[in-house]
Length: 403
Image (cartoon, rainbow, N blue to C red; front, top):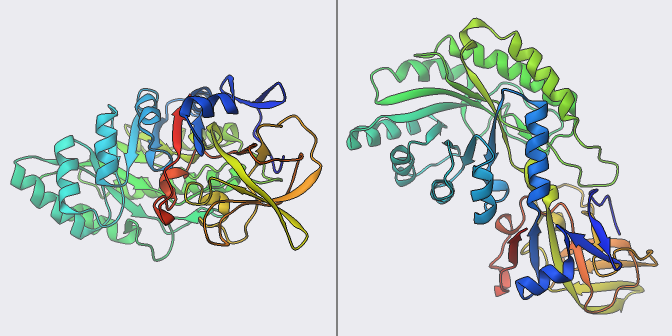
């Protein structure tokens, strides 16, 4: 196997076991490969870990990480809210029975704003223009729109895989412009709910997250003093990373939770009645997913072994190194058919697409791997199928099972 396979996966008759069944059994149920399998027990364990580390803090699921309908419907019953970033996600969250929905993202179209207003979702306003459009749409319907201001903070979450705040950004309203925007809400058919302040994502540095959360609480307090009413909710964003690569160390959420509790206990009076939420996606679902693809061809070229599979970057773009990474590194990968066997050969695991970008594993150590064997890519529960170019070259979509 290659990389750091997440703990908790079993072996039966030498084969990989996922959620109590072997990889081949899941493929037999689905009918074919490629296939994503998502283990609900692993997701539930993450939710429980969050509740233990962050008592009193609301948990929102960022469904962009994995919007698979059975997973989303189940998740909606576990978390306190679902965060969406499009009209399509809004409709899916409503259908899933989400208790609370917030809608972020630049360039929301009028139809999306109207749907959010009608659904009672909180619109995280990204600009003054969006605020005025939401107000006009609400007035036209004889309704009041629930809104929060998405703030572009003057700081960033250091060490993040993707930096969402600090400097010029397409996301949110610059912090120094928020007071004027809050004053402009007066007289508009808008119900101010609070702030959404998201500084970055995919961070494994507890110290960096703690520092960003403290700055976020202080910024929310300063802005709340300018608001038309005390904020009901401050969404602190997320940023919790997961360990994809060898040498990565899992984030210490207990340390982060203790520091946040300390910061909230000392928060200014203007936030005394405010609730706080963390918006997490990847951290909740990434290690619950396994992508299974079958070896179709085994060949040598230039003295190197290539294992060509029926899956690829059109389903798992991130694992190919083409989703926000600067230097490509191998995701955890194993031969699921011979999971317990000792590695004995170096192989390049590639997909079925006609592009050299379609690489799932470069020079990985595997047991002797034959045509027909299953390859498992781990950490596949987040930003998999729907974050990949599924229509490229017209290959069929992968199967998905919520186990």
